[in-house]
Amino acid sequence: MTEGRDPVDDAVAGVRLRVGVAVPAAGSGRRMGNVKKAFLELAGEPVLLRALRPFLADGRVARVVVALAPDDAAAPPEWLTGADPRVEIVRGGATRGASVAACLEALPEDVQIIAVHDAARPLVPASVVRRCIDVAASGVGAVAGCPVVDTMKVVDREAFVRSTPERSTLWHAHTPQVFPAEALRRAYATSDESATDDASLVEAQGLRIQMVDDGALNPKITRPGDVALGEAILAASGGPS
Image (cartoon, rainbow, N blue to C red):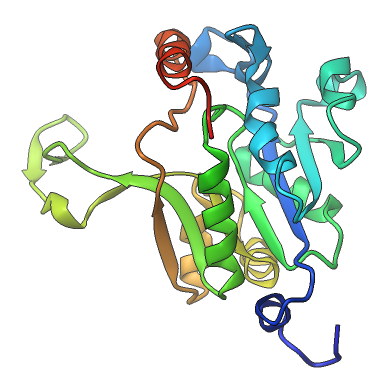
């Protein structure tokens, strides 16, 4: 890379783009009945393995760092350690933000783009991953998601409605969330790691964020019923593409 050039400019000019992926997977699975979501099986395969596959299929991805709970990081499953030589495992933290920070520390310094993806989103299409990386390579952030189709309500602590926002401007924010590496590293360097949405941290740094429609078929496996939903989506679609 020519000294003084912007990494995104180099990517646009045809220089090989190197992408890093951070996957926080250290959660306890409280809403899943204390079952670790990443290790659940969906149609015979671990949720985490399915979540990684679209990124490993992209030749621009140089490293994927997965943050596991300390006991799992000490003795990770063979299906994860043998998934791909680009996969690295680190000890996660007590919060999602702390786990993402641990991943960022382990990613190579020379990656130009960093994607953050929920371990419990196993159905993200590879096409959405590619589009998010392409958007981030243009110098802005990219967040996979879908437009809101239901009427939304803002409520108080007792669930009384306070207002009804105009839904035409609202989107659900999913993952992957993909950013120029410097912007995400800078955002985490100044955060307290309590945020549950990486884009909100990067927004605060002034970077523009563009939503990328994932077709609303990118659910997060959070509660027991989500497993059946995920398997139904797989059965109907033949798997992510």
